[in-house]
Image (cartoon, rainbow, N blue to C red):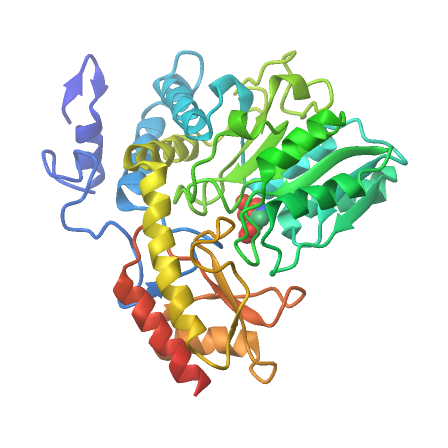
Length: 404
Ligand SMILES: Cc1ncc(COP(=O)(O)O)c(C=O)c1O
C-alpha cells in the first residue's frame, strides 16, 4: 500500500479494498466503467420525490471515507481526526446550498427527524396553537400531532386545493387563520401531493410580523429548486438529503435562525447557542461526507439549471398527460409559477391507484408514485437530472396503454 506521511493514501485504500487498481478512474474517486446511477437495467425511475438515486461519485466518496475510518477509528474521528475535518467541510458545503452558516445547521437522519427534533425543542404548552395545512406530509405533521397528545397543543388546519394557484390568496388564508394563541406556522415549501410551490417567504414575513415562529418543511424543495433560507426568512427549515439532493439515504438537516434559539432548543443543542457536531455522540461521518458531496455536486451544477431541466421534463409530462381524456391533472399548468417538477394526475375512480402503480412497474418498467389515498386517487411523476425526454415519452406511452 502506498504511504504518505505514515498514512495510506485514498488511492491506495481503494486499491487495497479491491474496488479498483491504483491509478484507475475509481481510485481517483470515479468509475469510468460503472454507470453513474445504479438503476436496475431498463428501469425508468420517475419517483425522486420519494427517494432519489445516489450517483456513483457520491457513493465512492462515502466508500473512501468508510475505508479511511476503519484504518484507525479513533484517530480518524476524534479530536483533530481527518474524517472530522472532512465532516466539517461537508457541513459547510451543505450549509452553502441552503444559504446559511455551517454553525446554523444540525445534521439529522431525515426531514421527519428534523421536524421531530425542532418540535420537541419548542416551549409549546397546553393551549398553544400550531397553524398548518391539510396538504402536509406526515413527516411534517407527526411532530405536531405528537405534541397535541403529549402537551395539549391545538392544531389549526387550512385547506390548500390543487386548484389553488394564487399565492396572495393563500397568504391571506394563513393571515385569517391566525389566532391569539398561534405560536407556530408549519408549512411545506413544495407540497408533496401536487408539487405546488408555496409562498413561504410571504408566509414567513406574515409570521414574523405577528410574533409567530415559521417552520418550513423543505423535503420536496432542496435539490429541486434554489433554496435560500435567509431569503425565505423562516425560523426553521427542515429538509432531507435523500430525495432531490440525491445524497445518501438516511440524512437530513435542520436549519435554525439565530433568533429562533429562544423559542426552539433542540436536544442536540447542548453547548449554549451553538450547534456542535459532537453533542449527539458518535455520528455517521461517511454519511455526512456523502451529504456534503451531494450538496457540492448540486451547487456546481447550479440549482437554476437543475430546476430548468426538470421543469422542461415536467411540462412535457404535463402536456402528454393532459391529452389523455381519462385523466385530470392535479398540478399547476406549464408556466404557472406555483408549478415544480412534481406532476400529479387524478385517475378515473374505476382505476385503483395502487394497481396502476404496480402495472406501470411490472408491465412497463416505469416507477411512479401513487398519490396517498387520503389526498386523491391518482399518481405522481417527479423527473430529475438523470431523466430524459425519452423517459417521459415512454412513461406517457405506458400510462396511455394502461388507460385504454
Ligand atoms: C413534504 C414532505 N415532508 C417530509 C417528508 C418525509 O421525508 P423524510 O424521509 O426526509 O423524513 C416527505 C417525503 O415524501 C415529504 O414529501
